[in-house]
Image (cartoon, rainbow, N blue to C red; front, side):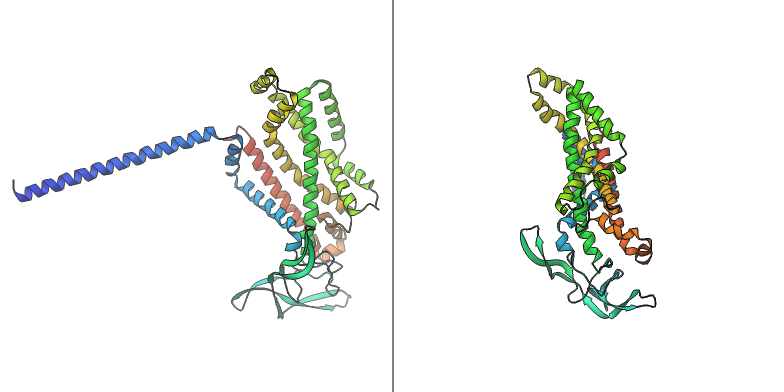
Length: 397
C-alpha cells in the first residue's frame, strides 16, 4: 500500500469518527430535550392550586396591565404627600382656575424638565385669563425641599418628589380657590381607594362568615341567612346608600364620617359573596376529603378553617377584585351628590362636586380630570378581576 493510499484511508476513517460523534451529540441533545419536556409535564401536574392560577393568569396580558395600574395607583396613594408637590391647604390666590401647565422635557436640545411662567390678566368680562411665558422658566427639582408634611404620622419632613423652586408647577391646573388639582387628585386617591378597600374587607368578612355558615350547616341557619340576603338585595343599592348617608349627622368629625360611609358601603356588598360561597360550600361538603375529615372526628371549626375556606380562597379573591371598583364608584357618587364624604376630607367625589356647575365645567374643563383617573382605575380593576376569574376557572386550559 502506497503512502498516498494510506493517507486517504486515515482521512476517511477520521471523517467517519467525526460523523459518529456528531450523531451521538444529536442523540444526546434530543434525549435531553425529551427529558426537559417530561419534567415540564410532570411539573405541570404536580403544581399547586396557586401555581396553576398564576400560570393561567400571566397569559392574560390585559389582566397583567390592569394589575400593574392598580399597584401603581395604590403606591402613589401610599406615598401621596411625597408625590404631591404641595399640601391640601396650599393656595395660589393670584392663580384661580389656572389651566394645566405644560411640562417641557428639553431646553435648547438639553434634557432639562421645566415649566414656563404664567402671566395673568383680567379680560372684559372680569374673568382671569392666563398666558404661558416661556421667557421665564422654572426647572423641576426632584427630591427637593417643599412644604412640610407628616409622613404617616411618624416624622415631619419636607422632601417632595418634584417642585419648581420659586415658581408654580400645576400639571392639572388649579380650582376656584387656587389649590393645585394634581395635589388634590393624588391625596384624594388616599381616601377614595382606601374607602373601597376597607369596605370590601368588611364585606368579605360578613360574606365569608355568613356564606360558609349557610352552606355548611344548612337547615334553619341557611333559611334565615338566605331570607336576610333576599331582603337586603330587594332594595335598590344607590337609593339605599343615599338614604343611609343622608341620615349621617353633618356635625360628625371627618374620621367618624369616613368610617360611617365605609360601613354603609359594606352593608350591601356582602350579599353577593355570601351567595357564591354558599353554593361552593354546598358542593364541597359532599366531597370525599370533607367526609373523611368528619369520619375521623374533625370539628366543624377545623373543617371550615382548614378545608372549606382555603378551598374557596380563589373565589374570594376574584369577588373582592370585582367588588372594589363598585365600592369606589359608590363612594364617588355619594360624595359627588353631597351625601358621602364632605370637606375638609378630600376624595375624588368631593373634587367632582365642582363639576356640578355646568358653567364651570364649560369654562374650566380640568375640574373633570378626577373622573378620568377614576375611570382608569375602575377599568384596571375590571381587567384584573376578569383575569383572576378566568385563571381560577378549573376548565380554563
